View (tube, rainbow, N blue to C red):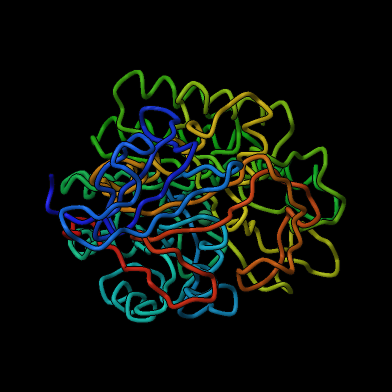
Length: 457
Ligand SMILES: [Zn+2]
């Protein structure tokens, strides 16, 4: 018998593993999963090899053990715009939502993460204050191409860029030439480029967004803008060999382009977001700017095509794009979609929002785990998490998939308690969140770690 002592056993009737959903005991030692065994196969919780008896946690009949959610698209905004969102509140919302790892976007904090100094500033602000693990993306803008290699070596997981106005002046977009230059540079060290793919020329030619009519806002950001931008990214990735990822795919016009590129061997992946999968343009109330995001939430027919792309693997993962602002910026009294901040706050609600719609379409929790834990972990190369499997970190979400709840924004833990989901009924309640084999509480001690690409863990 092994001399290693398990310090925790979680027993559950349903454990979502890479090989399917099974009953069993997950045995944890030193914060890692040591084995998954049949219930009772070791005679309960007797001590191993003369050690102390492990603590045994038995899940309720209506609970399922999932790996913690990995959310690779979160805007924390601190330092500089911590009145929008900060490391404490964002990671507390993560705990409440079953999310055990987030990767922070390089823009909306000041300074944006465009060089090693800015990365170190963020890390020092976050240090000791995060309730879940936090990694960082860098940014690629016209001014910092020569800084990308050192940022890569400093531990960012990749680089985000825009092809249209980012919404903040300190994070300018790349031109087509700039995109090619960034991709050549990033390919030279085999890094990863994330692209906000909306084509500036198409957006400029579209009617300007203004007023309270949501359809007019959608018309200002047509699907063609996404498709044209993705076509450019595909061409440039093909020419440079750079690995690329399209963030927050909203328009189904993008899907055939993605599928063809992948079939052709282009190194491209993509994500979509809970709001594109749950919400629909037809049901956005007039003047309700809580629903504004870029690219926009589109119609029901488009939404079903996104679900089909998840089914087919054309879109392999989901991330929240949690992008809060102040309540004043998000909800101007005019209700003008042109004036409001674009961004949906959903870090805490991503899992139930996706599950609610997934189960209605016949998907299982194993699918949701593939999209929200394994897929995102794979994107950033965090091969120590994202699945319940021997050797991985004991990061868990205990989830009650059949229980419904009504969203009350005032109960959410992110900083500005506004969300497009307020008042809606979602299915699936996060009962507890576990990090390294310890149950973590929203108001408990911050136990998260700051993650760096390539660091030994
Ligand atoms: Zn974003």
